[in-house]
Length: 427
Image 1 (cartoon, helix red, strand yellow):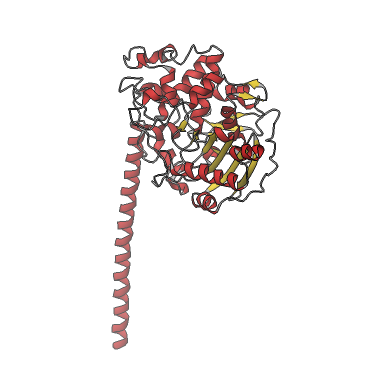
Image 2 (cartoon, helix red, strand yellow; image 1 turned 30 degrees about the horizontal axis):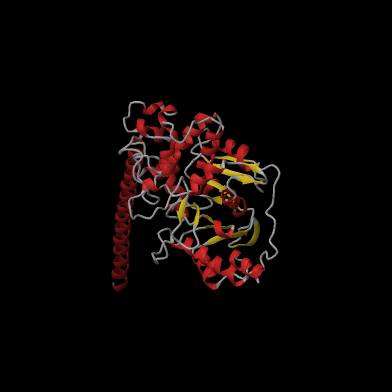
């Protein structure tokens, strides 16, 4: 009898568990159905509102473990190739790679994921090093350093009379704005100097904003030309990536070829860049993301700094008009209020309050080409993140001051500063 009761107990227990499992499966299936429905609704809404780029953005960032664009992502996009022709390698300094980095600089470089660091002194390679398997052949994203390159292309287009001057109205090239009273007052120079008054939100992390759409969308020209202007051009400095993208559209329309082709013909090959480069585009048949995404290496990026340092001259050839170079690297005083740090020229960041003075090309994740004119010094840093701590070193990003000050210390310790050479000659 007891055995029969035990069997019945097991039978009812199994039935109970079977019923509970069935209920659990139904709940899970219901949750999955609701989840799939919600995903479908969200995806549908994104397409209906023209924000489907968010899906692509999520695939290329969050699903790959990133919270923003990354330095290697050119492989995820269509690209125009910028071909090198006759490479001119950097000549090597007598002290090439014989100088120890300071402990402070080493710690700074490694803490923030540096993948390449390069120093040129007096036009010669003095020091370079790579991390995490990267090399002098590795291509990584320039991010906003490309803005400076686009303005160099602008200078060339003015020199070649494709564009009359920095004062030419953008509506000469962008008739889409002919009925916009604010746009009618905007010049190509306003786009380069970041004084356009264009309607833009500069944010590299928020998914729903024009910067993200420009990065992950598939029709950047249409996106740009649908946006208007929100304030009087020619006023206060406001850093907006949309300005450079509009400038890219103007360049293509004015010159008649892609920015990549123009860069190849007028700068990349004449300067003897050592490797091909890649400029990421919005789509296979689209245009380059002008405000970012020129992919190259420390040595070739460094040549842009050297070109500016040499007032646009390269081995006796005037690649870029010297007066235009001077304009680029000189703070645009009228764009800043009295007492405000004048930190930007024409697509070049500047600090002429710091000793030594410096200027440079600078990008989102700590991409840097820094020029110290008094010492004929070019410093290049490429890496995964930047040091944006506020340590009261200056009004630009914290890392720029580490790079300048610590390299200067290295030079001083090895008697390589100009002032030391002058004293030695005098003695």
